[in-house]
Structure formats: structure tokens, C-alpha cells
Image 1 (cartoon, helix red, strand yellow):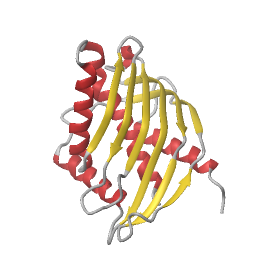
Image 2 (cartoon, helix red, strand yellow):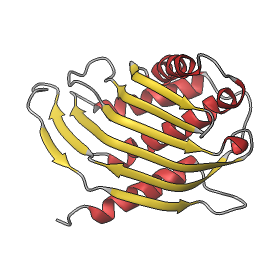
Image 3 (cartoon, one colour):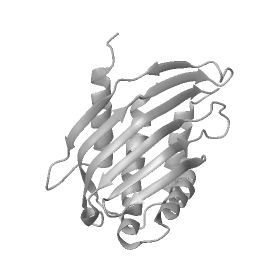
Image 4 (tube, one colour):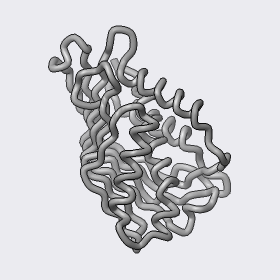
Amino acid sequence: MKRRTLWIVLISVLCSVVLAIGGALIWMRSHLDTFVKTAIETHGSAIIGASVQVGAVHVDTAQGELTLRQFVIHNPAGFHTPHLLRVDTLRVGVDLASVRERLVLIRHIDVIAPDVIWERGAHLSNIDTTERNIAAYRTKHPPKIDLDVHFLIQKIVVRDAHVQAAVSLFPDQRLRVPLPNFTLHELGKPPHGIAAGDVAHAFIEALRAQLPHR
């Protein structure tokens, strides 16, 4: 299973969410929860090439806290399991004064009860297909401004994670494996910080260190 690709996508999406709504967190004072929910579902679905849904969003502008509940990335066309990724709760705490700078301070990212389903299709998995969709979107919609944004992340916490595996011919027959809880501390050092992709690699190595050796 391509755990590396999956977690790179997840962490990159989280970092992108912080950047995408940073200005809104500072300037918008009303209807912000609805704005963020719509932005994530609309833009996330376009980038992923599959439906992205959020059950509920709460933005606390005073504390710089974003909470997403029932965050779901559905499968691209041709796959039959319930979802690619479902997370019960995502919490991101960010220093609002930094979100418009090139070095963004994230106090914490809490990923609570993520459930990943890796589904093998006739030629590609759902994760492979999603990765291709993201690459195609980026080719068609290159960023208008190249912002060399890096991060200082004080803590990433993952709790109650599970990974499932299935094949498209038998989507209801899935092997489910719990993953260990773990925490990462102090990712990125001033003045340069750490790129989103490097955050994902550090995350993956921490996960790998806790998996049983076979």
C-alpha cells in the first residue's frame, strides 16, 4: 500500500487549507463557517477529481482554531468502497499574524480517527487515480503566483487511525488494520521552516517507526 503517497496528499491538503483560508480568518467576521465549508468542498472536489465533503466547520477567529468534522474524500469514478479517506475530526491551530507571511506558524494539527480505504482496481488503485487527478489539475491550473511558503509546526497528533484494503471486485470484503497513535513535535526551524512535502515525509517516517517489523 502506498502509505507515503496517501499521507503526502493528506498533509499537503491540510497545509493548503491553512493557506487558502488564512486571509478569510483575518478579514471575515460573519458567515465564516459556511464560507470555509463551501470553499473546501468546492475547491477540494475540483482538485481531487472526486467529491470532498465536510459535515461541519467551526472557525474560532479569536483563538485561530479551525475544526472540521466528518471530513470525507470520496473515491474517484470506477471505485466502489465507501470512501478513500474519512476523518472524524481535524483541528488546526494557526498563528493568524503569520498566515499572510512566507513562514506560517501552525501550533497544532490534530487528526482524530482517520480511516483510509485502499482499493485496488483493474489497473490502478483509488490512491493512484487520485494522485493522477491532482497532477492533471495542477497542470491545467498552475498557480498564478509562486509563493514560497514554509511552515513552523509545533505539533501533529494522530489518534485512532485505521487503514483498510480491498479489491474492486469485492468492495465489501476489507482487511482493517489499526495504526498506532503518535505525535510529531517541532517540525521546521526558523528562519526557513519546512515545506509541506517535507512535513509529509517526516510524518511518514514517524509512522513507519511505530509499525511492527516483519
